[in-house]
Length: 497
Image (cartoon, rainbow, N blue to C red; front, side, top):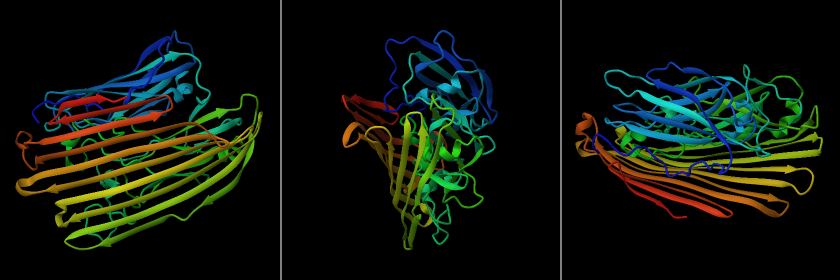
């Protein structure tokens, strides 16, 4: 690695955009972040593209040069979190990068003038010189929105939610991230008190993001094990290719429709999000909540009832084995099924949500943590069945996240990290016994980087090879792209479909 390298990129597909629709662009935020002062501005709907859109695309363009850590950021429009991101680490000569995101589901927010707040918390001083310069735009494509586009986008008010009384589908999304530079940034490596390791957690490394309605468990999910661009003590792994989701942090979605009969009574209801496994009183997690609502246009009030609530016991076993190489084996999991109905203008509709989580990991390290290794798999299987008029519609989503990494500090303070990350999903939709839609996603990152630690930057003599392959298969087409870098130079960019 020299003083410059290829601009950051990912193998992920660009957001598809309508070919023949009229479009309008507006700038939402333009700022330089030097500290923890948020950018504040105002948003006004676009002129000339109507107030209904077939698609809305957010784009962030950023640049930074010098020396800087990875930083986390968010963008709020009207109090709604529409984007959460992290930043690449710059070269001395400077880098530029961009991120695109489909934000059509927030169209309700975009129809009125709103306050804008954006922050990428940063520190600039004599050592960390990188000023993060960003511009965020929205592109609106005129046209009829999809039937699944939410009618309302809500945020919590003092921890409570009041839904429209004719809500017939309610989905909460939570941008859950473990970060902040402490141990919760590396939550998957934490160990119980009995084990001699620098990051402790009473019950070990298992984390689960829960959402409750009026104190009752309403949803469970596995957080994605995001690795930021300084992760695993080796920024040379991530200078060009970030780990999956690092630049576009996806929210966890919870279908709360079984609780619609309760929520639709016109009163505020308490909504709480918590992360299982975080030591009491310890910070490090952020979990802002948006609520997306579809309404029954032909009913003033949609009534209903929660009819089933079955929460299995949370299993979490951590087994520590001492030795010259310490070992911690973790097995954990949880199940939840909730069901409820709503009486709509088109009849009674019953929604059943079943979710099953599992985690298995092996963490091995030596005294002094000069060797530190983790092999882990997380699964999050969810089935949502909607039974109303006609055959029941069922959507089965199997999510699998993997991490296999080893960091070793060897002779001459040469630090080497070998890493593999996987973000996979398989989705099948059926109606009755007939499959109606499906897709499979596989985003795999691999890296191997070595540098001399504890010396000035120009003496690190870093070398590294990184790659990402992103595959997406669905009826009628596929996307398959791989990128490879060596010492920060892009050596392959190949599309197979």
